Each structure stands twice: as C-alpha cells, then as structure tokens.
Image (cartoon, rainbow, N blue to C red; front, side, top):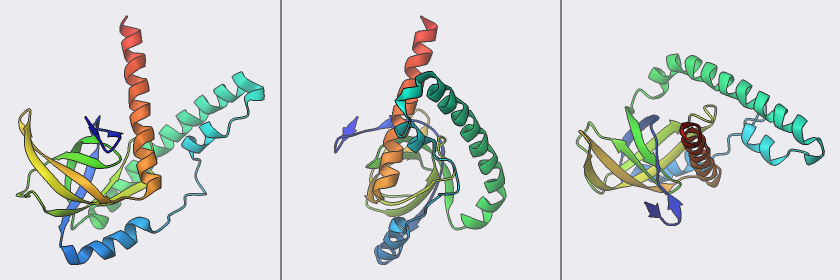
Length: 185
C-alpha cells in the first residue's frame, strides 16, 4: 500500500500512544521538532554513508562489526529503558504496531478510539533503539485484521529525521526478507 509516496511496511514493535485534545497539538508539536542529538553514540546509519571506498573489504568488515556492536548496545538500551518506561509512559497506552510508513501507522487497538481522534505517539524502531520517534496523528479508519481490531492513523507532525529513519527501517526489512528468500532457494 502506498500513501503520499511512502510505502506501508508490515512490522511489529512496541508503540506508546495517548489520546490528546486539539488544544494540546501545539505543545506536542514543539516536543516533536525539538532537536535531540545523540552525538555520543555510534550512528550506524550515518557510518554506511561515510565509508571510504579505497579500503573496500576492510570497510565492509568494519561496518559489519559495528552493526553487531550497535545491535548489542540497542538490546542493552532497551533492557535499561524497561524500568523507566513505566515512569515515562505512565499516561500512555502500550500496544504493538502492525505497519508503519513515513506518513502513517497501523496499530492494534484495545481501547475505544474513533475516527477523527488525535493521538500522540512515542516509539523506538528495532534498528535504532536510542532514537525515540515522537509524532502526532489523526485516526483515519478502524478495521479488523486477523483477530485484532486495528487503527490506521495519519501523521500530522513528525520530524524529517524520524521519517528518514522509518524509510531506512523499511529498506533494512526488505533486505532481510530478500536474504531469507535467497537462503530458502
């Protein structure tokens, strides 16, 4: 499915949301566009773009090694965050995403949400668990998927960096799916 040029990626990750009023949108928008830099942490996404091609095999080995280290650090970050999640997201509902794109998100709904409701989201993609993605969205439709009720919400506010991270996440998932198909053949 495509929306505004962005492909909807089927995936599953933890998602936090809360219903907000129209009057809260500006406050949420300020929080979304506030710049948080993680200069002290290795950014695997940027490392791939800055590789010097003169040492081709050495660079590939370095990137693979850094990817493994980054994955392990992300795992540790998520373990450390678990204790603080209860505190930070106490006013949020915890659920799971079904699909995501740079312009919308589908998630499992256990609450009484309605089309037109405004939501504030916070989530961490599995490829970059130190980058919290914050967004506001409006519910477009509610539908049945398998045995769950799901909600489709279109992002109202999401910063460009986070949109690019979601797009990259889709590419990583596509690459993993292609590799697994090749291994099956």
